[in-house]
View 1 (tube, rainbow, N blue to C red):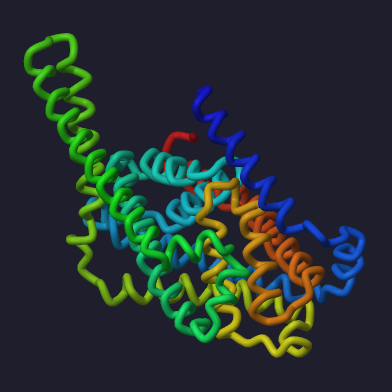
View 2 (view 1 turned 45 degrees about the horizontal axis):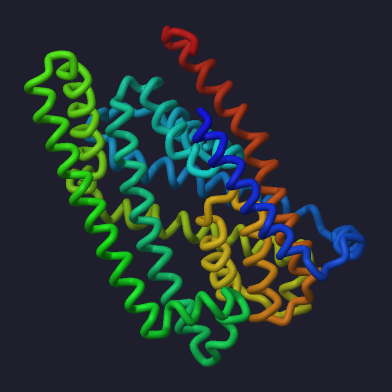
Length: 343
């Protein structure tokens, strides 16, 4: 419990640091004044795009677990995805635990195996993000200084200098040693379980959970409709890009700064890096990276950029916080009508 609280506190401190960096040299009065010009009618298509992204994510997740249970409830899967996003607002990575816990309880599935599928999902998302980041980097490669202004000199130097290559080698070696140590510890635990009767029960449970987790990670081998999995992945990122592009129209930025869908994709990928940094719901990190990318790449004033980032992030938080209880209520109501016990 103390460890979890400490993680949340550190995440809040990290988010606070990036919020300070994002709002530094920007007057809050100017941001509030600029925000009054927003065309709030665009909130509706923004919310529709956000909902579609969650639905497509739930449908993609279904493909990873449908071999265990064919009749998976769509509302339950969508509710699980929304619960995950809502819990991520409380603390980083809490959603990766709460989503499988919710769905496993509702659908009578293995929590460990579902957690394995979440890890697989994250690996796939990171691969896709890395690919899109490569495309974006090539799109910006004409001036490396642009990347320096967004990510900082130290980060770019680390990625390009020989010292960075050496550091990669040490990091890879450290990870390899961790894997070897973890495997050796697991083997030792299994051995002790055969010798010490008091440990046998716990070792059996841990071994069973590990096997289910491994099966979840390897569930990609059992996906029959890969074309549909790839389609859902593309649709998820398309919705994310729309959620960046639609707010341009809220601020009339598509006309004033000539921003289009390709520019929205660039901002989406860079902001995804900010969201990946462990702060609650991307607070601070999202604001900083969006403001910097708009300022450096497209000459959007800092006031406009921070207002844009604040409104889009707040809209997403309000949307998730508002729609999740609705889906949970519908899921609970349908379960009660079907004769399942009320959770």
